[in-house]
Length: 114
Length: 110
Picture 1 (spheres, one colour):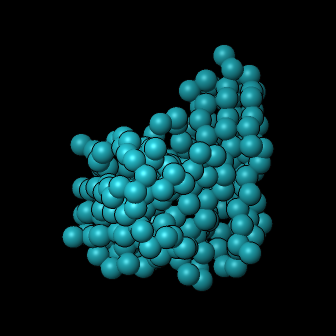
Picture 2 (cartoon, one colour):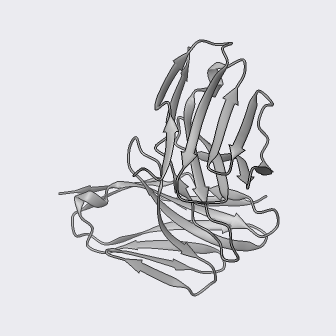
């Protein structure tokens, strides 16, 4: 069974469109994340949710809006897509606790904006 | 400024040729340092977490060590299947943020 899954795997769209990426984890974790990996493979955190509450919100354009309907899901909605949004978007999850938790990543969604 | 720097950017080794990857960090208050492996077209896969200077962890041909300023990922007698990008990440006490390095692309030649 896939621990962290993302849909779609590939997304090709035109500039100006609105799109969503879905993420689900079946690990029972409390915390979920969205990362962006650019063409140079640099991985940068965008958002983090803990039990459906936003806890990390990096400097990301407000065209990006995360939504967490429950603690197993964290979706990413992107409005008015721009060329620079082309990247691979990874969802991740981790348990919460006293010790520093490790993160489990999904397979990624490859977004190409034309 | 909080920063994580990995070196070298890329490394080519012959099978069996041991080496080390470096991750140096300048952050205020380290909560934990992580090593991940990323294969092409896939998400990062967790390898190790290190919490304090002096700590070491091992898994098969990999050994991670931590000092107050840097971490090393030692690869002993690597095999072609160890070829991947190795990512280092740091989680900070201050605001719980996570910073990734740019990774080291490791290629092991048979």
